[in-house]
Length: 109
Image (cartoon, rainbow, N blue to C red; front, side, top):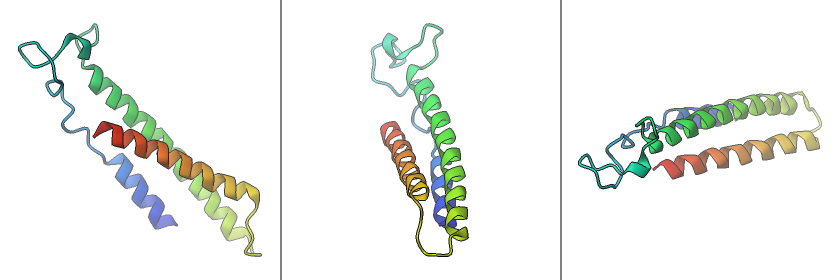
């Protein structure tokens, strides 16, 4: 379980924001950018959204690591080969968070 968790954390945190530069959107100005892709201060709306998504994904993966560590401790201290409902809920929350992160990563590609 520990190896899987490390793998997921590395994959999510190492996804580059490549190809999302300010000149990558389809638009009409001389640089290939539309006014709707820009914030009032001139920064790229798409880049800001991707940065926010990356921050949310990083926070979510920190939560996954925390929950997975708690779940691992719960499983290790349990000697009867039966897990309690709290452990099942932690596992379900881990899955829900990872799906949310995966959705964000799919959206950015």
